[in-house]
Length: 513
Image (cartoon, rainbow, N blue to C red; front, side):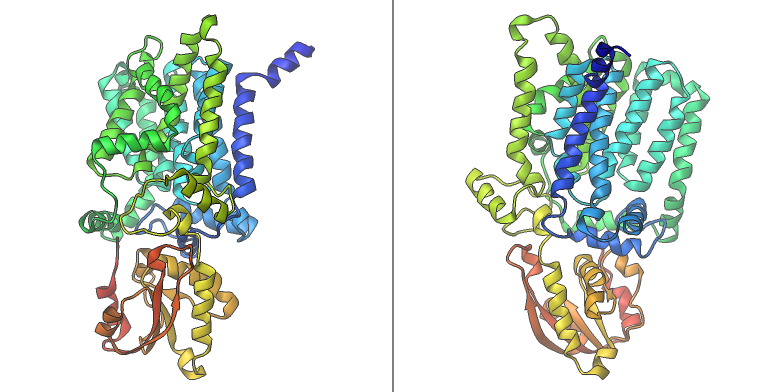
């Protein structure tokens, strides 16, 4: 092999995508053991101990993955967040592959990958949740759609179906993506694939993979739909106007990437080279409209942008080709994207010690926008919900272990939120604590265990609510880490003598929102 051939392989577009993906992986590996376990991570760990084909508030894959992660690597923060870190690197690599498949050369691939590296995906990939994996499934689908169109080979729809089905088992919002693709096919020349059996086989495969969760939902009276109705009725989430939603897309994606993804939308909808893939531009618009109409959170649309970054980077590469007067832009603009990404990075991932981060946030005078109404604290929610859990469990353990042995043997730990319950289940064994019970989300389905309600240590409840169901209520302690969210500052009560046996009262306690 000649020296030039070796050099070209090390500097090829694919090699550049790998390098940027590795940078993202290293960022997470160096920082993912900071700030403690996130509230939802503790809940997913508990779900992993109750494996099922469905859960009240999420699809089943996240529970299976967290179970696999703990089995392979253990319970440390580094181990738990390894899969999300790898998923983050994978979405960078997929973006590069899509750009290359669209005809992009080195500049296009690098630009597209840097947009992913310097955007809001740092937050998604910094802890364990289904949000880290969702863009991988969506962009995997996009990659095979492009291959099917470019090579006129309908067999790629089988791979699309496989990834779409797995994506549905990861997060139900993949239904919106799938609907967008369907409308895109229907309204563009790509409708020709409807006459091909491979498209229908791929669709059937996706449904088959999703079927176990559908059956679970049916057997549980469509629990997730009930949850979504409750969320809407209670006004839990921050509701954004269409303009606010779009502005927040610009902010969380990194404002300097706006010319790239807007060019990507133009590329897919109007450009002569991109019109073959027009269904992708239509799909983006469909999903965007659905998220706005359904009052989705600002980050719900993030999984779809890597394809726009890829298309936009290809468009800009072609525009700047052979234009020597503006050739400096090919170096300066990606550098600016990275610099602004570095400025925003501490707000997205735990790259700074928390005390330094607070000073940094105060100096900038800017904090990430809220996605839920009730979360208030010195840190944004995605950081604040990582503090206070071990201290809370230690306090509960002190109360529990100070009870007389006879009473302790019949005392349950009742939490009004899956965060407290998950923390007790995870940190509690080292103090000899029993498993928690909670009427919140999937914990409700796991029931009151064997507790009768004679004695309960009650967490995150108002005294009036406890007195409504208990004959005797005693305040026995308080919890509240200085960096935790405001709702995690509360009084702990002991409830003695429920007015109604706990198994009979349980259905009235159900709390899904």
